[in-house]
Image: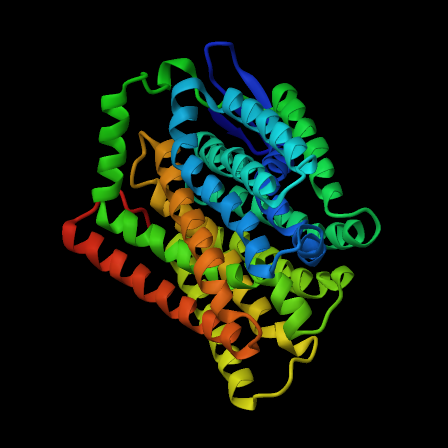
Length: 421
């Protein structure tokens, strides 16, 4: 592998021969692949009330379609990195998106809520391949600040998907019904499978792949779970996302019951929220080169602290929810997430330089499992009260900072040499 600064390409050394990979094409492709999981989460949220009427159930029952999806997502992300370590990055991506498309077709044809929940869980099983394997591809090809920079660029492009999802979903909810969301997802995922087949480079040569051995795989996961700095850091990153995850999973409640928005107005929540992530990711690309990974993480924590203070201000003022002020703390918070996520992810994956796919899987598993628990348990507690959503921002910001500091202190105490600066 070698970088080419003039044509923005990298050389992938594999048994099949060297291949030139355009960095810009790779960024767009990996962003699109990573986007499908959150896109499938956000796009159908405006149809929750339509599904309530169609299946004659309450909001809590429809919420389980999201929880089932996230549980399937979480469980399988634990294995995608390892699968890609064994069979390669490209086959994992192609097969994952093909099966996701089939699951989406099943969801579109569901005639009962139980069937829809089952197909949503099936969708979740295959939704994580792009996000998990995409991080491993970046780490295969790049190192140091360049890896953080590319990951941040992917996050920037990726951010436009969740921003567009509720706009598209709102239009479909009003004009085409809830089934239309899953027909669209099927088309998109089939297209991604084809794009990966023809344009994604294989970044893991056969000679570097992990031999198929259950004993080795189990030992790897045990090593990850016993690596306390890694687990604390993964928990910190997962909790950081929940500050915005509460608004995503609770969008049907926050937009309709708290803010009084219509099904076609969910964008008023999602565009400021995702826009913050895009801005934060852009800032991260600059900080990666100028101040380094650790300093960029600290800058992100400072922004998250400002967001927590803004949330506290809204609670103290106790005014009725008014746009756009109601989403200002959340938007600031997501800027902080956009800054910290690339650097924290790279630092954590570098704890296991010879098994980055596995590390990426465990990292994504922790984050998605926390999101699933949040959707099923925490979000229903927040229903109907704006101040509770603001408390969530404050709580998760504080928990993130405390856990990351604890992880850094523990790795210093243990003399962890793989924790990169």
